Length: 319
Image (cartoon, rainbow, N blue to C red; front, side):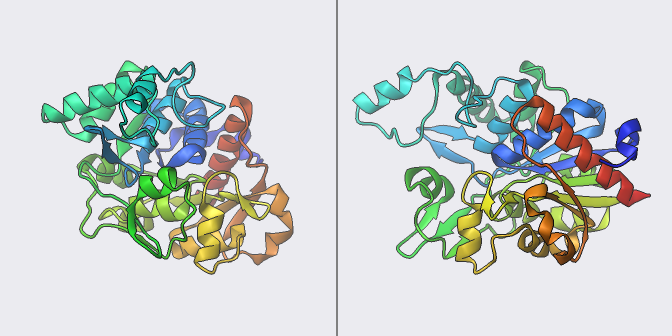
């Protein structure tokens, strides 16, 4: 950890985190613990969103939201702690689609969201309301207010993301990841990026969590041009993904499963890259400034430690 992390000078900077999935939620929670809430905005992937049994389901938004509120299920990595499944048991008994689990507590968010969207509110406004009800102080923004579904092209079909990820357990080979054309971010996201001093790309899956965010015009151009520093954290540690299909997708794309390949994939977007001590032997292989730290986030203390390390490194790059 750099000397700057001791006085935490970065607390005066405005930070935007791009996040999706469990890794993104963990780092966002760590950063929220050390930053003034008015200086932090978390922009969340909605490419995973879909309509299921008449409800708009936003898995990444909910994972980030539940982590920030401290009500997340730490064992599963998704959903609510203390969850029960009576509704899904009933759905299964009726022969309904039970391949995507919706917990009884989790359904409260989905039902409220569906009603508010049906009343004409934007997804941004609905997310703000849900966060307020959960006592979340930093700003949490969906990447877009309009559907921007990620599709996975396999050898036999083009599948909506959740069907590939959950129903098929991400086993079919992904020949191509299709992102929608003409997807646009919101005014709120654009304003947050215009004001940002630092952009932190969380250790989320680059292909199905971060790329959908960057694909929303004009997010990628704004990330490239506006902040004082952009830093990404590797989701690959010791030759594998910490969680999820990132390593499998890298192999299917013909990429080496290393943090170097992740940094190269982001390319000129980055000013700095954080990777794990398990990969310290790769230190001289990067074409961008790096910081090698313990990136594993197994509890609250380690999330805060990683957040401080990442923010201190990003701050150093602005000096």
